[in-house]
Length: 523
Figure 1 (cartoon, rainbow, N blue to C red):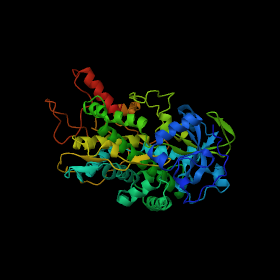
Figure 2: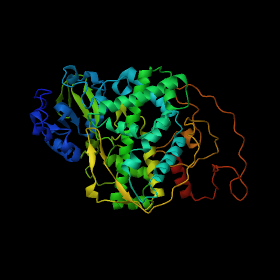
Figure 3: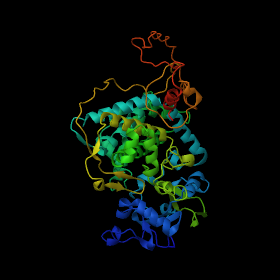
Figure 4: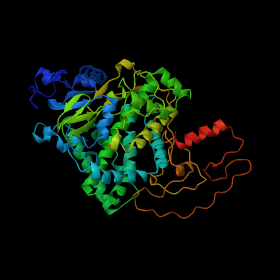
């Protein structure tokens, strides 16, 4: 086995040296960047697993040493034991000894910020509580309506042409449109914001500048919300009893925006690629044997939107997966390799339907709090696209598809498709409605796609929504709405109403009722 980290940190060949283009760096360690890592990450993971086992020494940009955790159980231990593996990047020995400069390509990812992902203990609980409480105040059904509307708006841009690139014209734009609306800044949505968000995680020379642009946008938003609160996510963070500073609010908005955008854009592209290239997958989906949420969940196993998460830092000398980890060492949560760990998934072709043991959203106290929003964007967006263009076909050979990768993710460059041209769909021209939760009449149902494949709390099943999130300021309950006009005896709804009776006829088939209940509850 290669002895890790025996070379001098930062001692790298000059930029013109051919060694920069090889997958092997100083000390015989494999690089987690460069052509091999970008073009065949699965092959690289297999080599590392064969050479080192479940925890492997690797090199980051600039040949800075780190550990990549490959095993499923080892990743769970890594994420669930903050007493051994901290999220505070200031512990990184490479930062302390100057091996990693402030302008390092990965600086936007690892530079410490006053946010919950870089905190442990009480500080993490305070900041994370503000985030989760604010997310609880989002009206998920209202968001799903906007996702559907935004999806159709994007499809309108190319529906009459009969061809499109689903990456640049759909997957890369839908998540940003939704997140801007949730944050309360729909006017900021544009191409520059989309490209800056994607550029930040690529480790490019422009990543730092892209980060500065996004921070500027969010800083202006927080300043507006301090002066004029509104029923949106930014205002809820500003007003939360955790009393976060403006810098804390800006950095949390930045964190959520980038994580939600990058992961969801990749997820949508990956789901669409699987639908278009795997005949069994498309047949099951179109035949009703697989729902879009199930397709999304299978994709989270096979092609997670984040391949790895950087990072964790060892609090002290310890052991993980048979490797001796030194205090201050950097570790990466290996999401993609953990999902293919032979000990938990010996047959990679097996159907993982109903199994949520994947690590697509990491784990432990830092597990992604916004994963349900990401799932909703992918579920509704893909469903809306396939409904509008049911004859969608790949317009290139599958072997011609190209990916761009980095240590955190791997995404499609293009997904060209063709279809029969169809007319644009008329969209509701009303402005964005309030996305805050509100009290709903107990007897009303709202048509929407399934929100998530897990049971909801009892009050949700009954058609009720909590008045406010735990820890959030109480909201005033609106005046009781007038009782709905009873439906005529024919069973048709009364004119002007848009509700579905909560109770079906007692004679309705049991299987139909169960299916509707499962759909409504989101699983």
